[in-house]
Image (cartoon, rainbow, N blue to C red; front, side, top):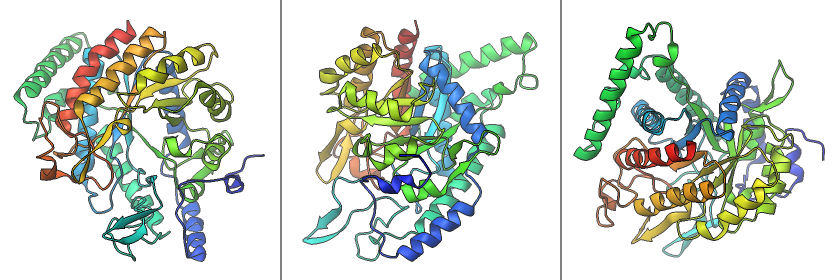
Length: 447
């Protein structure tokens, strides 16, 4: 079928809310279609060029951020702290791993969430499941759980404000490598981790002193004081994504202007379904989550639809199998795909396949997360494939949602600061620890 930005409506679709007020939905999407784009085609092309280097093994993709952004917890401090954490992790991977890092946040649009059931039951009462703040409210009452299209407008303006802050942080001095010591988040309380980061910071300062003595400084080399951070989210709520799709005035190509990069989840990646069809027509870099039941033929079929021209930097295969299952199927997938000559990025999402219950809380064990990361690298290298990135649910806040790690969160201490509205996230200590552990793996993969 010929592609247009609304042709997805003729395909089977999953994980969509039911809007009772169709007239209100039409008004909202019409208004969104007239609002300015959140990102621009030139920025998207710049990201694709950087991701092309990842696909060639010349860079590494760091993708991370909130499980689901919240209207209630929105604020400048949260955005700043996540930005600083991304900088810290990137500098560890760049300096210790010897590799340029492409930074992509799960931010400024990560509002919609797929659910395993359309309904949630508590104490015998059944209501529609919470599908993210862009769709309905987290509170368990009938009015809050109704799908409200006007929430898309709120999501748009929060995304615009977030992007404005991110651009200011990236260009306004916070990313200056001379400030590397100050990137430490105040609550990084583990002495060993703090010492490791301080030692690395001192080495970077010495390196900057040397290159400045050679005549290279922030004035003539802006990359020493500025950075680029791109946005991404799961393209789940297609009325919103359609409304923010634009035709570039220079190339006349269609770009989804809600984010620089978009991905399809494990539950909605059917090659003949609406989400794959919609994203097949936009020029953005794309990702697809791949779970433990996936076969190489499914990935080939998706690549033929989502990257029909076999472009470098276009398609990211995001592995999310779980530490206990990744060894069963990933080697064969890599073996078969390698024969096809496909330009693909492979990254690891070690979060979703390792979710467990601890009492009333969903959690993830840091050891399992690290185990899956390590196995992904080892399997990729053994099959002659470049392990090109990591995809994390994390926050710059001092939460207690994932157990273990250097911050020693236990099942008993989960309740102290369990703040996520959906899935558990790594806190800053755990995320930075993971970056140090990954740096050696990245270095090995590159050499």
